[in-house]
Image (cartoon, rainbow, N blue to C red; front, side):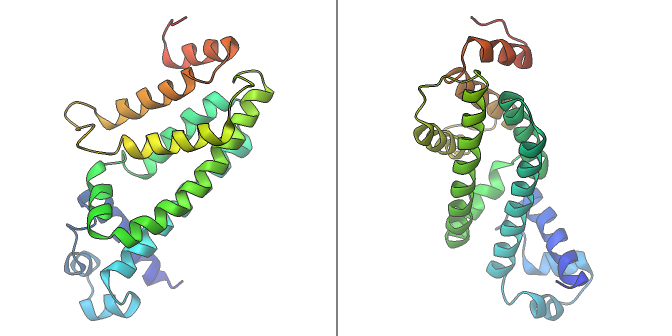
Length: 204
């Protein structure tokens, strides 16, 4: 990949995450980059191609970050919180507007990225569950395939603005609540002690 193409991807990613995939035009990007539209189109034949490469690059970056966390983590509960923090940081707080625009206006790109994310997340959560069960922090009677799928479905569900409007459910707190909800359903008493320390709660 050329240096200019990399710079276009980086700037486009920043603009898309800040303003939304529909809101940002190729004119906006070329103007921000200080280049002509003709030059921009010489690297990306249309906006959908650019969006596809941007979303795949974001996905690859996040997966790489998760892999790093998993390879250095020794506690599956802390691991999930570290992953949440890293993902929200990578997505600039996981603003729901850009994601909603991607799903509505670029459904083919959204479906492609979602399929990749699902397979990756399913494997990642399964490994997390295995580690938790092995350490006695998660219940040993869990159906790992069910838990990994329902966890993914929930993550997608909380991004629905109609169900969880930002004014009532700020993104950071929403993800915190969802992760705690997930963990309290699978932890053992030993795991609950660790979770209570992380969440600063005193639930039984």
